[in-house]
Length: 216
Image (cartoon, rainbow, N blue to C red):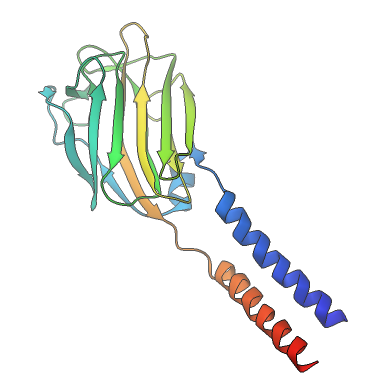
């Protein structure tokens, strides 16, 4: 009786773990270190190959080995490099009220970066907020309002499914263009051995119960 109760509890734990994983939504991270701890291998696009110049969008780029496309609209499809010092570059859209979108071309589970406001000339400027949105392959979507961002403001999104797009906009803030630096794209983290152990243990115990029932 005691063994049966233990077996039933273990199986229930494994089933609940699987169900929780299946129902998990997109998670938002506002710390780069916390984001990196939640994902697997990460590629970063620094944008330091850009100039303070106009680029016809959409653009196909890579973050490490992960390909993605940047597009802007609906008013202006062009994209611009943005910088304060001519060395460390970010990327912004051509029209301050447009939405800039990042669409993955290779399967990734996470996307993020450093988000802030820039002015007409590409230099950093104060912004009241930016709106960031992520969507995964199930159609699930999450919106995050980043208040008073600066160049150290990191936001990342992680999903249990493929993350297919991320967008940024400053909406209609006078003199503010939404800007990103060091775009991160990441694959899913490898599950902890204990997670596999619980799942396999539960399946094994289910087999044990079935065999025990047949023997009885």
